[in-house]
Length: 113
Length: 338
Image (cartoon, rainbow over all chains, first blue to last red; front, side, top):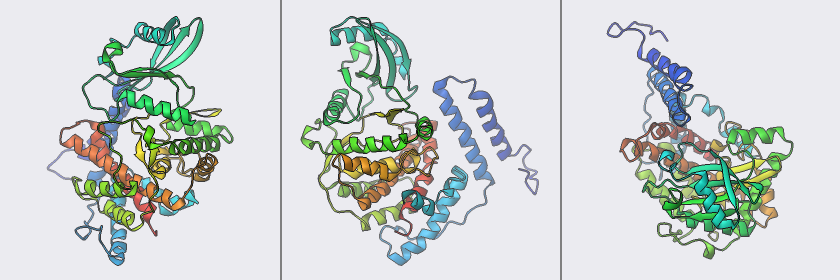
């Protein structure tokens, strides 16, 4: 991932590029050479590096304006908030677990039917 | 964790325990730990008993002074009650909470062959025509038998109180307290809480429930359901709190087209539940499916918090905090348009 405008205050590899190689090293070198009890933790560490790399590369999301609590919202307010909240969760998933939202409400309804 | 107990958990000592318990000459061999690094230790082993070979499993709590949700004697009583009710559970042959014997409280049960890893369960069911349907049917029947037992038979435990009102009231109260206690608010879970309050099912009598029946806590072999495992979280609740847990997306190991553990349809589970006298209610099922999604999402958020506040500092707990969005998504999917 090459920045469009090189940032002269920092050297390549960039933060994202470094996290990518840390993740690769954990996965390809550390995990196979690690005792079984620690392998899971090493895999999780690799996954967290990938999460961080995606977070650093992601466009900043405008935080939606929401009422201080949605628990008591009336139907109209709740339905308006639903759309924003869904977008917020989707943006978090794009960083934490890309592709998870491919299985959506319609897909789950099909599974249940 | 397991190293602290390994000094006392030996073939010789296990042989002595079984010799005393079974009144026969027992030689233990081939100890094989099956869960490395888990809080509880599970070790499979074989034993020669008066010349014949039999398989066993020992479950042990580490003797670390850590408080466990359930004592071994209480867990044994749950298992024996379930066995008596006709559920598929492992038969307990010996148990003790005396840590001087094998290094920690333990229970020994008969080994049941089959798969326990969710992905392998799904693969086996996919490769064996009719197996997934059969397993779901048997789980449903087993749960109905448990739910029909009396709450008077549930072992009394100091820290475990049955809900004072209905299970639904207890669940809503829990949600209210826990959501207020999150490190950061979850607008998604607020909408879910709102839905739960507005769609409460009517009250049904409380009953004994397992609390954690899912793909991952079952043994499955070519013949069907071998056993329902792990009675650590059994408690008094309501039937669909138990039944709907099985339908959570996270137990499907990405095989999302099959609602029940990635290996069966809800209709299979329902048929089994009804075959053993259980009463099915789709709305109640859905409410508890939504609640249990919220419940697990809050549980993951709490793990993240335990990492940050130092109660349980670990990369696994830290990573849990970043999994909360999955449960927010699942829960939103379940309430959208309803």
